[in-house]
Length: 209
Image (tube, rainbow, N blue to C red; front, side, top):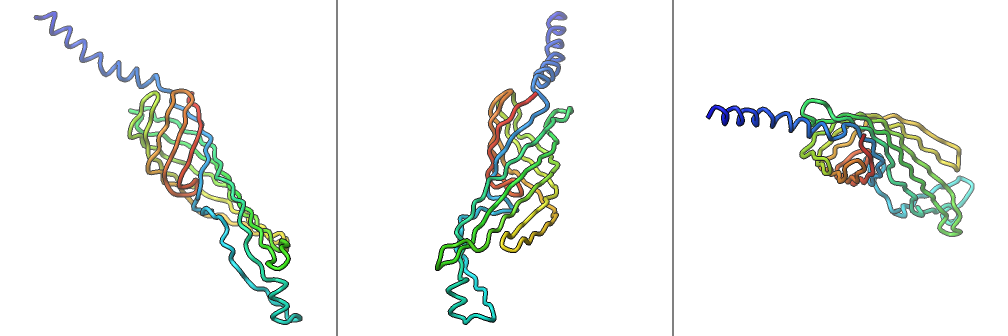
């Protein structure tokens, strides 16, 4: 009886140690390259053919219309490319903290409706730096589910090439990821759903070390 009690007590003491050792086998650091679509800085655009008029005092209204009536010829919008670093905290490892850097760009041409010539080229870009905090719903060696939030700053630059006019702005921004999954052990694939400066839908490829 005494030997049985000692054996059971040894098993109870061994379970937490084994669980901790198993958790310690999971790498704590990760680097991920991401690609997001439809960000809060640049909602996804397919071109809406907005019209506008510019009238010079020396021209008649009809002549001005024929010369300067222009339309948006669609935009060339890149995804939001990002690189992020995360590190799991030591206690229980339900949380991770890190930093994400991202870049996105959009080019838009406005053309004369009569001649098809490009009248205005507008290029807009954003560079963002954002600290983040992650909470794991589920955390295993080859599969993770999580939510994440971050607040940072975006440096925006816009340039109009017809007049060499440009402007810069810095604004507060952020990202809220409601649901994210990672599949893979050392090398993993990630997909996320959320809203903010990194996009509504994100995909990523990363590694742990």
